[in-house]
Length: 237
Image 1 (cartoon, rainbow, N blue to C red):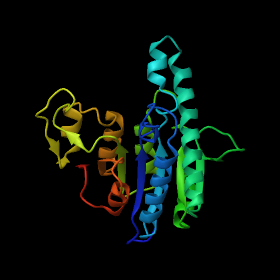
Image 2: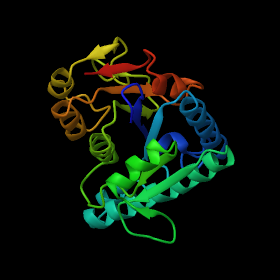
Image 3: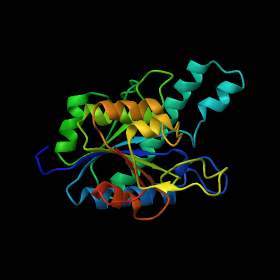
Image 4: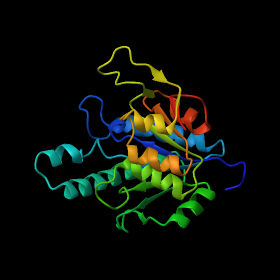
């Protein structure tokens, strides 16, 4: 990565990939739009890595609450992220964007194993790299995975794309007067116990000085804006 090249880690919510009518599964139109926007952003010279959640395929937490072993539920959730990663790779390749999927759980017929230096080399060659299967360990969220991979590849920013348009000073679902914040410090985010993103992930980004931008990926054009560094959503720094 040269001094003037921007490298970002884009964390995509699995729920945002869901079919809007049923609330789960994969909506092809959404995946296609995301792929086009990633391609537009990459065309500006930005190196883009991606971590995709798996909530649209399997919500491990809810299943564990029904009596499933928590570790087993988490491993199933990791496999769900692989499904989303393959769907996104297919859409990106159809947009003629060279893409690699790296999995933290070995499955050589489907994806490369996660190797940090190889991932960085792919990015330097202009490829999109999708990190799948979380960290390979249970009890870690995909937010934490995104923070870890962002730090490992020396990303300039972690872009948290979900269904919310930013960070609020309180829960807008229960407080009609909640105010969206344009900026917030890592410490204020952690102290306020704001649940837009996993606290462990925010703490890791704080320790390694990786800024986080939280924004709404369902609004067309927002992914391009976030990757370019536009002022949308909320900046955590």
